[in-house]
Length: 131
Image (cartoon, rainbow, N blue to C red; front, top):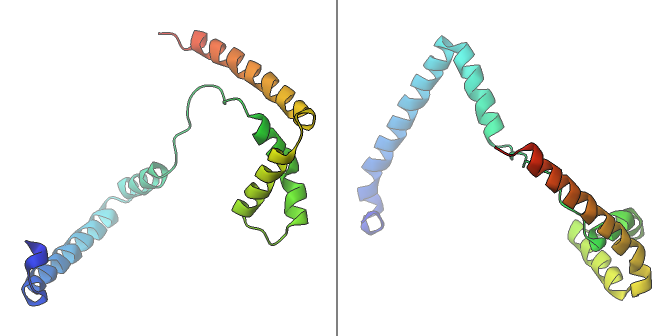
């Protein structure tokens, strides 16, 4: 129904909304002045609400490609200083794809070790957090 109203018909509602918003902001400002400790707590809670909660449990295992990317990223950034983050990721992906299995083996070995670490930590975490 709102979309069917003309701009002229919508104007009284917009004015009422603006007046209510001003009234709300004024009363909120007054409340904050009268309750400074509560206002600080509110601001702190609001600030923390936007932060991502940290997940519980062990950090997941890294893949061989991720280990390669972490090792090669600085070199690729130096070789391609004007490249964006996405461009660097594409370069790393192309390098990984072009590598032989023998060249990938050290990263595969590290990934297998990290997977073993993760599985052990996951088992220990489950034991520690049984109800």
